[in-house]
Length: 244
Image (tube, rainbow, N blue to C red):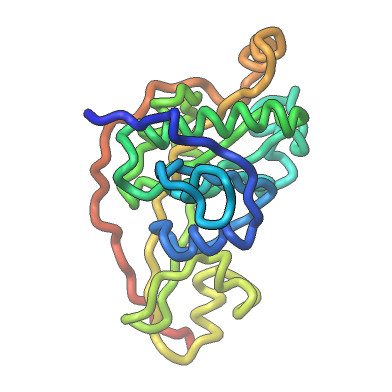
């Protein structure tokens, strides 16, 4: 196993425009998201900068933190945490070829950066998507707390068989609803739906040991063993006819 050379790596805050370009072009979702802080990971190439008397650096990845959705995002972790004290790790991307443990290193360094530069943030939450084959291995490697598969059932929609799947939240503005039967009454042609698997939820506490103890005693959800399987079965697709 080839580990990353951390002496050549550094992280710092980058602007949202740069982060968005990297995520949209390279992340498996190709979708931008809520962003409160974007951190870039830079690799020292060993070459001298073309214009400045310093080593040349290359941006090789980005870690994005955003405000989590919902007023109860803090309480969903513990009643001792306010929603303003929580960030969600919404996107992570690093180019291949820089060492097998580089994602773990980047996340750990990002958490250190938050402790120093956003000291009001006391907890992080993130979700691993099973349909993308992600049980959350990277969170397990960096000692996050696993709380199981949490959340309500959601549906994705296609209004043309060759279209990409659209989440119910995405289509809401077009139909004023994401209720399947109500959409059946609005459309004139058949459409397709599939039930989306709920995501694995992980949390990480950024507090001092003293405060961590208190929060751990007041977690809303129990701590569970890490999931191991990457397997995920085929999603059932249903064809829905208009209701006249």
